[in-house]
Image (tube, rainbow, N blue to C red):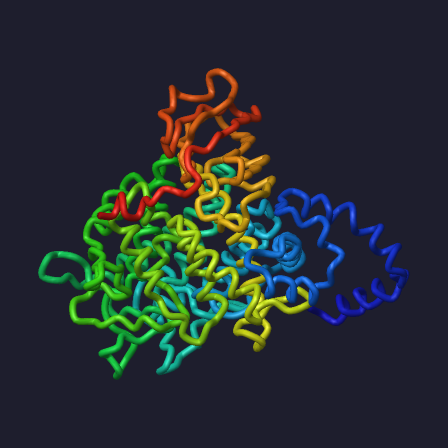
Length: 526
C-alpha cells in the first residue's frame, strides 16, 4: 500500500463517528443480508444470553451439545470468512490443510464473495507456480508452493524434516473449491475462465512428472511426499513413493479437467491423453486390517499416530471414494480414519478426519472429534479458535467447524443429495437453511426430529433435473406433490429418485423407517 493510500485511509478513519450504535446501524443491514443466507437452529434460543465462557463451561458438563454454542460458531465462522475475504482470502498457514479448511465453508455456506477473493488470489499465484515447476522438477505446468503469501508463491519452503519442495499436490487442492463452486452454481463462464486454465497447467505438470512405470505398467509417483508424515521404516527420508494423496489429487485434477472440457466442448485433442494417464494411476493398497494405506507401495510401513490424514483426500474434499459408489474402498477409508491416532492433536487433523467420516456416514467419529474441538481447548471464550489445545491461535476451526456442521447435515455431489448423513444422536432435533448443494440446488429448509421420525425438506433447483435422494435412517413414507417422485418407494428403502423443476421450490415430508441409521459399512463392505 502506497503512502497516499495510508494517508487517505487514516483520514477516513478519523472522520468516523465513534459511536457504537451509529456504526452498528450503518453496517448491520448489509452484513446481515449476507450472514442470513444460511443458518442453523439446534434449539439454542434460550441459551444465547450466555457468554462464550459460560457456553464452554456448559458444553463441558453436558453429554451432548450446547445448541447455542454450535449456532454461534456456525454464524461466527461464516462471518469471519466473509470479513476476511477482501482483496485476498484468509491465508494463515499452509495449503496442505490450513488455508483449505479456512475457505472450506464458502460454497455450501453461500459466500460467493469469499470464492471471488480466493479465485483472484489463486490466479495471481499461477505464474510463480509455473516457475516452481521448472526450477524444482524441470517440468512444464504448475507446481504450487506450500506457503503462498499476498506477494506470490515462489517455492522457498525447503527443509529436511518437512521437504515441502517435493509435495506436488498443492495445486489440485487449491482448485478443488473452485470446482465445488461450479457444481453448486453451474456457472459455465466461471468454469471456462477460472477453472479450466489452471487445471490444464496442473495436468501439464503431471505429464512431465509421471515418467516412470512399475512392472505392471502403472505410473510411479516419485519423489512423493505425504504431509507431514514419515513411514515407520524409512527413517532416512519422508520422501518416498506413491503417497495416496498425490495419486488422489492427480485423479481429481484429471477427472475434473476431462469433465470440464466435455461440458465446454473444448480440448478434444487432449482428452485421450488425460484419460490414458488416469488409466495408469497406481491402485490403492490396504493394510492387514483392510484399512486404506497412506503409501501405495509394498513394504512401506504405516505411521498411524499423526495429525494429518492426507490419505482421506479422496473422501474429502474429493469425491473419488463414496459409500454408494465405491463401497469396498469407502470401508477401507473409514477403517483408516478409525485407526488414526491424533499425533500432536492439531485441530486440522480432527477436522479433516471428521469431514471425511461425515461423508462416510460415521456419526460416532464425527461426534468424537467435534466434542474434542468444543471441549478440549480449541475454542476460546471469544469463540476464536486454536491450532492445538490452549495454544497457538489458528483460524482452521473457525472455518472448519461450520463446514463440518453442514457436511454432517447435508451430503451432495452431482446427481445425489443425502439427508443427515452423520448427525450425532444427541442433535435429534433441528433445522438448517440456505445450504448450497453441489447439484445446482439450494436446501432452502431441512428440519428434522429423530424422536418422532420426521424430516421436512424444501429444495430449489437452478435447472430441471433428476436427483437421487438418500436418507440413512430409511424411508417409511413420503408426502409430496404429484410428479416429484419417480415411482413408489419401498418401505425401509434408503433412497428415492426425485424430479425437480427449475426455480420451483419442492417440499417433501419423510417418515423415517427406523430409529438407527443403516450399517452400510458392514452391508456394502463385506
